[in-house]
Image (cartoon, chains in turn red, cyan):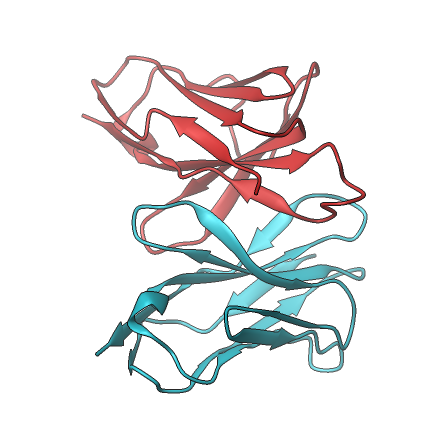
Length: 119
Length: 112
């Protein structure tokens, strides 16, 4: 089946530094990728939607200058948390929507997540 | 707007017990409904889905029926196993778009 990977799986950084998280679709081309944030014992909250080659669409309340998203190719999207602060500590999950939407309609494939801890 | 309300956990069951996790939704259109499962340390995996009213999704012994009249998509399994221990998320997707709305998740622990 379709596989989505994330790198790194866990990162610890100092406050004020920037962290880049990669999301890759390994065996399919992703028209659209989504970035979610999951707080402990809470649901996934959609942060932004990115389409290859265009600017990401951010959900209300998400700072686009803080969470930079680049969808450079049909298999790679990156999320950069700029000037990270302890309150940015969270579990970040990406998902990808296949280009073959007729076959995989309404199905998203999720990455394993990246745990960010900001000291 | 769209939202999903899920039964709060955690849920602890003995092996071979019957499982029900309630899920109700609010939607402006005609959404597709999903159950995702997250095993410890892993990402979300699609468990089953239903795309229209009265459809029944099923996989690995789990079932859920899309009930438009009660706006529900309850997850059931007749006999749970220890390996079913995980967090289960109910979700909906608008028929015309890709955005997903998730419930808060229900943690299930099955004890031998």
